[in-house]
Image (tube, rainbow, N blue to C red; front, side, top):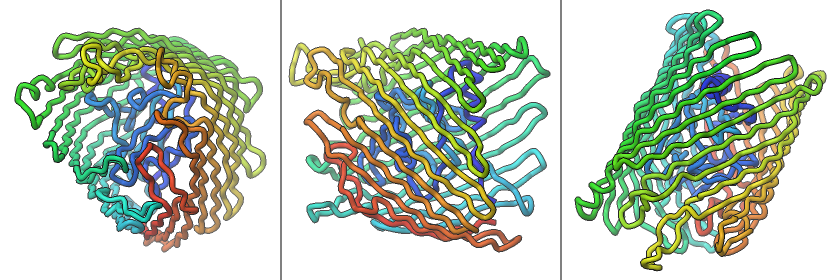
Length: 592
């Protein structure tokens, strides 16, 4: 009755574009958590959180900015040509089963949970959660098995919260309310030698934007996001495999401010194809082509001339050729990507990115892995064209990513043991930062003068077991990261990049016996800086207790209660944007 994550599909889709996929982490989604809390279990990942439910939430991997971190939904990229970063709060977290972090591709892939049918051709879930700060989260989904090879699912969920949590000084954090509705439908199908997946999703939100403690705000924001996408994969004989995916998305953001109202409308169309040829049993070649059209229209509160200057389109293309070699103990992937971007005003960028990935099995269960890759990040429309700020002479940011690691996995009786050690070194050049303009030092503009060097290590130890009615396990993750600002003449030269933690610790444990479950997650971040100096370390402990009752053919009912930040630590992920203290959520769920 429970939906299951499908991580294999996401990895396969990315691999078929001919690029590296070896270093991945998979996180199973807990429906009681929001996306930021879920992602914080990955030590190499920084989650930018502007506080509360309504604050912007972004993610970046291993010392790079959020604009460098690609976000995918079922293998199709989520675009934002305006700012380059997707607001993760707009993603329908309840409909996904897992998230795959790909360190080689610097990406996060959200994987839709597929329905599992047990007692008939219909299955579904109805749930409601409520808790601190006047928060309510209703949710429901239903799926139909139309045939042995085709299923159709639909879901709808909502979030209503006042968001007014108390601060340590006795005041209340206001203008943090949010009303959100998210809905969608998925069609899954199997073919002889392939499959397909069609998806439609909608997000609508009305929320406050409280600003910071230093600059509180009464502004508000409305979001409307609609996307239709599809994926088709088919093996023709043993020689040729075809992958096609496409997407059409409409995004509307309306910002209400005392200084005037701004409306942004984005339209995105993607068409992605990949052709894999199996030359030998040990050798495959992949050719891929991605085409994307983006349009941004803005209605400014100022003159029509300014609005017209900020209405732009962009055509992007990516051609990739990759080759994969598979022997008994050695695997090698090499690829070359050529990207070309054309903007409305005839600005063009062309980039060439090689990559290599290898895996060597030392003994059964113990692998040595490594990758190296070059990557570019094209300037966003805000950086290029925003009236009074944009700099049309910007170059793409240039990055090199490298990694060397060891994987261990082995079953021992009822236990499955896993361990992993990764060391990495990343360099980012031509980083876009704001600096005073030569003509007027009071006017700041974006320039390609930034540079970042990031190196570190991630360590994972995991042990899980299944024995009779018992199942559970523990895991420990530690991340050490030194991400230094190497920008010449910078006031932060050789200092840690703002908000990136030098030390990250994540401890997790879970136990389940006959439907009674307990889950605990401890998070620690230490060694953080921002532009004004050191920031306090922070840690949180989250506990979830649940019990499910089997009703036979009638289904299953479950109750769950969660406590977040149990020790009520007052902390800020971003300076002057406080995070909630101790909070609680509880709910009931019926599966049929």
